[in-house]
Image (tube, rainbow, N blue to C red; front, side, top):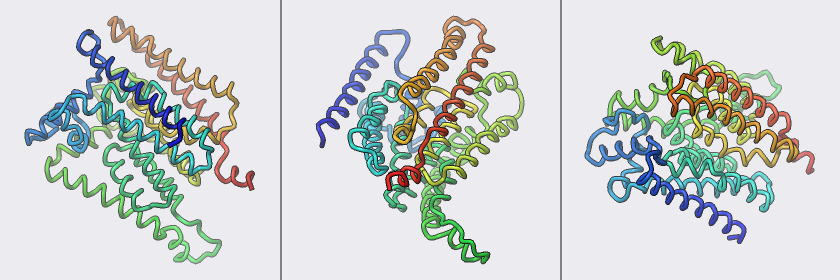
Amino acid sequence: MNVRVCAMFSAAVLIRLVLLCVCVYQDQNLQLKYTDVDYHVFTDASRFITQGESPYRRSTFRYTPVLALMLTPNVLLTPHFGKLLFCACDLLSGWLLLRLLALRGTSRGAALAYCGLWLLNPLPAGVSTRGNAESVLAVLVLSTLLCLESRRLTRAALLFGLSVHMKIYPLTYALPIALSLAEAPTRERALLPNLRRLFNRDLLLFAAVSGSVFLALNGTFYCIYGWEFLQEAYLYHVTRRDIRHNFSPYFYMLYLTAEGGGALALVLFVPQLLLVLLSSLAFRSDRPFCCFLHTAVFVSFNKVCTSQYFLWYLCLLPLVLPRLTLSWTRGLGLLMLWLVGQALWLSPAYILEFEGRNSFTLIWMAGLLFLLINSFILGQIICHYRPVAAQQKKTD
């Protein structure tokens, strides 16, 4: 392995080991804990599984039982196993990014630099060492894209089915994947030949394999845990009305209508669906870029948005950056704008959470501003993105 690659990954490992040591010290000695409450939820659910009971006996466990099964060593071996696993997934995501960047024609040196934006980024390292499982999804999504770019459709379909089972949001990738696998219709008016081109062997194989994996996992867990599994793992997230303060522009509206029905929660999916559909039609030829747009749109317009959700699209950003024509100055300006948007939100959130003063209106206004900032940044990325076809044409 290249010396620079070893140095990069060694630095990434060191950062995470230091943060894990900080985590242990802070949890044992300070009132403000480092470990996220979700990690304790995962561990409690795993403990119920080791006792032969349902993980959903833990009241706030709203994930697939696969996650609880993965973390049973938290109970059987050491409570730090899950954090080590999530950090390992961070590193594996970096390796997958290197492979994908190489497949997309990026030079080794540039690929390593873009990969460093993930490996040396304090946000993914902090989220994983706090005990959030977002890096597991990053591995599944990047593995799916790598297999698709390598034309290993069966493996890609298996991974995609597992990804959607783990969390709902990768389901938005189904449309661009389907459009990229389907062949363009001919100018002939014959219906049957054009249908055969649209629903070709590759598309049908991918749909059959991924659908089978998804249904098999869900069917198995439904047989074991019943309706409770479907309710907690999927239906809860569809009708979820989280009234706690978060980055979502809808949080204050949901807070004020907390006693209302679930119809509003469903209506709020409409902007996401429309934007995902438009981006699929416009950028279907470039799967990584289209998936990045889908994820950024899904997170920005979601009913609930926390810092860990940013990792859903940040893990795809290194695949987009090599084809941006933005200057360094403009790029750094957009980064600073994104960070300022978060800081403006965090200030009133701190006042509410730690000082107990009513700052809901300020949090809501900061959330709206952050949505505008994210929309502006996405617009800049789209305007300055050089598609694969254009880049290949210029090279030729």
